[in-house]
Every structure is written in structure tokens, then in C-alpha cells.
Length: 215
Image (cartoon, rainbow, N blue to C red; front, side, top):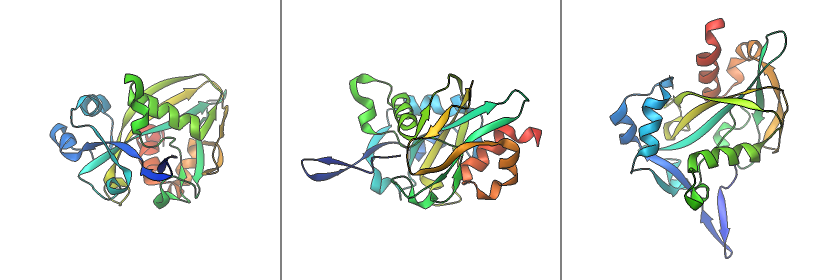
């Protein structure tokens, strides 16, 4: 979640982030909380000719655009069948200041215009960049896309659209790369349900939607 600003010739140049007009999403359907039919929305969003890179500052207070945010859950199940998620507390670094001191199970951040170089898949490139910046992931894994999160109940949620990915790890070999990700480690899903009020809203929605049937 770095890159609040980029420096060029001693001038501060604001980061350009990937956004989609809210009208594009509304034309597909309504997302309220967690939406499991991810491809119904994500495929046309990523194929839309209205996707654009815009300055991050104005976008943080303009709900007519939604910032696309990969939100990766790192899951590991021990030999006894207990499922764990990598969890951390948001610190005071360069991330979203309105979420500081909240516990989270999601790794990710904005897709930057720099992620679109050489005709690459900017969304995938940005997701991998955020993962590499924020955690040291040393385990092989299987990846699935699980859903979308939109939560307009707060100022942060009104301008972000989360894309929930689940990485099912073979080993719990993950550590934080950034001071902004404090107290990083694996916590059982059972314990996370007990401490739900400490989690940021997106983490609550993801855990309840993906793991709630067994609780």
C-alpha cells in the first residue's frame, strides 16, 4: 500500500490509480456487502473502456468512481483440520490512514498506472506487486477468486471495490515485509470469529461469507 506520491524531477506527482465509474457497476447489478458472483461483475469491469487511471487524492472522496482493490486472504489448514488466516494490525505507514489500528486478513492495495507497463495485465501485476511489498510469501499455494466487497456504510467503503482472492497455502510460511503490517501471524478462523469487532469491515464481510457456514 505504498506509493501515495511519486517523485519526478523533485516535483511531487500524485499516484494515478485504477478506477471504474460507479455507473458501470450499477449497469451490471447491485453489490451490497459481499457478492459471491465475482465473474458476473469483474469480467465486464476489467473489459470496460471506461476503466481509467486518475489521481488518488480526488478519488478518495469521490464515490462516483470506485477504486479497484485486490484483497488477498492467505489461508492455511493444519494437519488436525484447523483453518488459519494470516492476520495483521494496520499501522501508521503509507496505507489507508482511516483504517489504522484495525485488524485485517486482507493483503492488497491500489492498482497503479505503473502496473500497466509493456501491455501487461495491470490488475494481476498490481496484485502481485502489493503482495511482494507487504509480505514475504514462501509457500506454494492454490488461488481462487471468491467475491467482491462493497460497503458504503463508511467513507472508506464508499470509494473502494474489493476483489477477494483466497490463496490456500501448503505451509504457513508468511511474514510481514512492512512496519505498516504489525503483529503479523496466523490466527485460527475460530478465534477471528470471537474477535470480529476488532476487524476492519472488509475482513468481517470476507470471513463471515467464506467461513460462516461452519459457525
